[in-house]
Image 1 (cartoon, rainbow over the protein chains, first blue to last red):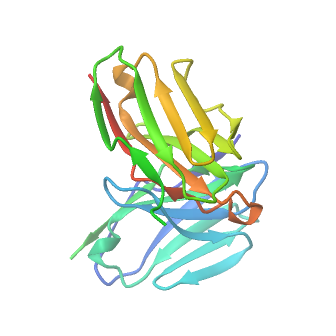
Image 2: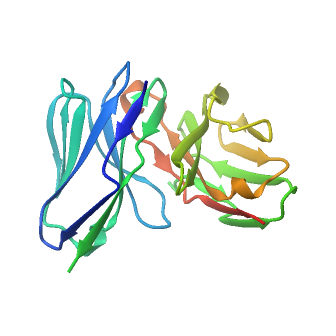
Length: 108
Length: 116
């Protein structure tokens, strides 16, 4: 079958580093994307990994291991504004399949 | 660019009424997606269009739901008749539609639908 699994909640303190994991199961794989959604807002694109390895964009990095069907989003120097839900997603043909999301709470 | 535009932003209606949600994608984007988000079911794809043609409507829950895209700059999602379980936030998203950009979609602000 096809599925994505990610933790439902993660809590961290301001200034820390947090990692949000995502495992997937799909017959065809074209890469893993990450989206951020603040409460009441629209999901916004953060990053995309087509190949194995680490992609860095400022404080955010995303990693992919296709052999392990696993990826993660790494957030460094956490800020209060990073409190949001984070979704991993993979492409299935012309559409994206989203995980259930991880709610990140950043505490002072 | 103004981004993806959705209207209305909020809709409260009574069970049995017809509801029409509207979306204007980003100019030049060839793919348009309708999603529904609830706490229980997360972010679900309902239907998507490529060059105004419906490609995959397997996520449309039942015949009460229909979607159209009469031209490249406008799409509607209609629920008739509406039921309380349809209460959710409905997002429209668009993307350039190129293979290299399938993974980045641009979401509108959503329509929060409440069916009483």
